[in-house]
Length: 528
Image 1 (cartoon, rainbow, N blue to C red):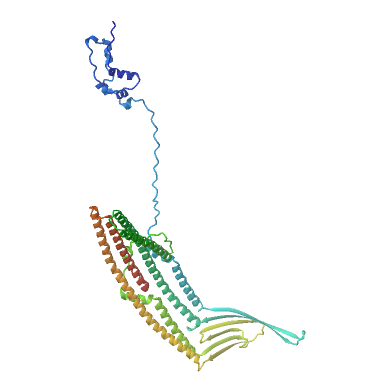
Image 2: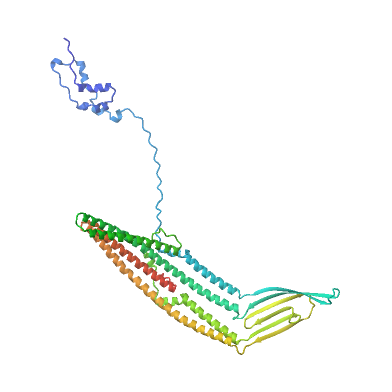
């Protein structure tokens, strides 16, 4: 009976089978339940079944030396390397895409005054007064002209054969100049110069008033903006309170009347919010008109500290003195006094000075048809004139000099006396108007100075209020962190602080506008 060789354990044959299949030792090691180094040693067969010697090596796995076993990465077939992806180009950092315009500041508003239609109108008014003054001054210069004449005279019989004609022509050049101070052209130039001076004062005062109006309009816009924010917060608060009351009412912990009251509060807050929106739109439009800008979507800076730092009130004495020279009304009243005094002087001259004319002529001919050079001076009009006449076609004659003087004096002239009396009364009225206007300017400056002082002092009280409400908000936040306050308490504290900041801002704007109103009366900017 033939003996079969002893049956080898399956685990002992597993490595050889795997190697024969072409797998790497590493994968074979991975596939085997246990590594060859730790594989259990097969049990020794009984003496009756001892295997022949040549078969013994087959029981030893070839991967016994564990340290020389390749790693999976080394034993695995080489996989074609995946080409590295090209480096992603660095994405350029885009420039800031924030297109939100910077807040419109008070300085922007003041700078924009010169671009407004109102300022342009003031410039045109001043330019018109300047042009009138220049035209009046130009009329005090020489006036020159040229004239000519042609005369034909027929003499003798009506028969053509016996008739004769003579022709003469002349060309005359004239010039005149107002030489005396009371000449009409000189008086008109002085009047126009005074009017231009008043126009300059009016322009300066009106420009200062425009700046004051711009500050007031800016303050209105800022207040409207803050009121809109507060109205929005109030609406949020009332909506939250309505939600709470509604939840309580669902659990029978609140009455229907409480819910209705909360609903009414929400509706009131909605109305206030819409009113605040409308007020902000109107304030934007008014400020845009004064600055020549489109501010329909502008936001406004509430930081006024820098402008307040530049505001310093002058002494009341300096303000009073400056206002006397900066008031258009007072300048106009003083001009009226000067004009009235000139009218009195003119009326006195017309009444007392005769209407006299001194003339001189040199040239050939008679006084009625003299050619050559001539000149005259009228005492009342104050105008000197000269002319030169050149004749053509006339017979020659010897030149001669002729002097003339004519005068007219009214001994009795009730009309001139009445004109003088009226001029004197108008002068008295103008002088009284100056006194009244001086007192008015002084009172206005005092009132504006007092208002500016009070407005400046009110800022510190509002600042203290903001500090107190800030502390209250911090307290509520700390209590909320430990569960001793609610979100409603926090919202109430924030609204109270916002209202205090609005009041502080209003006080700052009031101080600025009060100082601007004083500057509009005195011309003093207040800057150190």
